[in-house]
Image 1: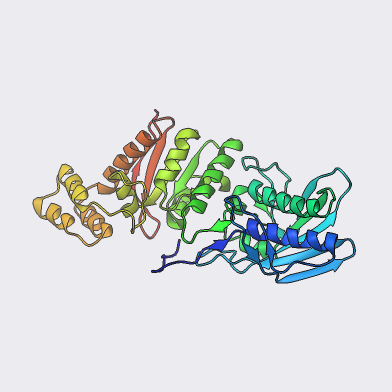
Image 2 (image 1 turned 60 degrees about the vertical axis):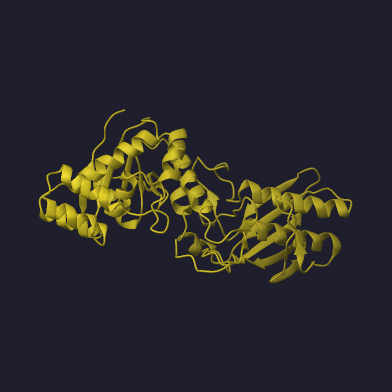
Length: 364
């Protein structure tokens, strides 16, 4: 996640909210002949934002409207994407059917809140679209029977920058959103992705999962184990969010992997490993060095060192297994957090991706 800028940040709208507004505009054009611009929708918390149309056209029995997603000041990969909804009337009594057009993905693995083969349009956006369709239908005295196809030009390329390929969503992006609102630099979307990744692991009977703090530790784990892509979870700094969810949804085995500084924070009890939300406990590392037999000078230098890397370098030069000790402490913290429901190992990698510390699996 990029660094949060100073000052008041502008919020934005989810792909689900944009899709609902586009679908409402297209459906209105089918029933009334004109596209409303701007178009207003109701969100789950009672807000009624308006969206300007970027594109709109009629093609026989279909109408299409498009809205450019504005994610506010959030560094959202889909900011600026064009969300298109094509709507046509369906057979009487058929209700609302959803289709994935170009750039919108399809679910191919179990564990998500959608059946395999369904378009990756999440439950809340489906509800928003259905409510918007029903509102317009009621105003015109017709039944809300419609087929809604959502498309996002370049969505397949954008999806490669998201979790979708790992979660088994192929062909494009997911239509997401639970409130319709994007709150800049919120952690909720990342944590939700972690939870869905764990769900997919469990639904597909993954026997060994790995939760990694970043790309370097992920690459290191892949060198240690031949794990399927769905088994490797990018937990980022959210060790607490990951482990607490695993306590309720345990996997058979877990490798927890990261750099020395982040794993040292976990060993000290921090559950959010971000540099702005937790600090390295140098005194604790100095105490570990003392336990390992370090001389007083090394202990003192560790207590005032600039970085975790400096402490590890000095410990390694002295022939002391500090990284192994930190890994064991972090493993104990993790096992306690998941209530010892499954075996956990901890692996520590340096910036070059070399394995520098490890505490292996211990059966509960």
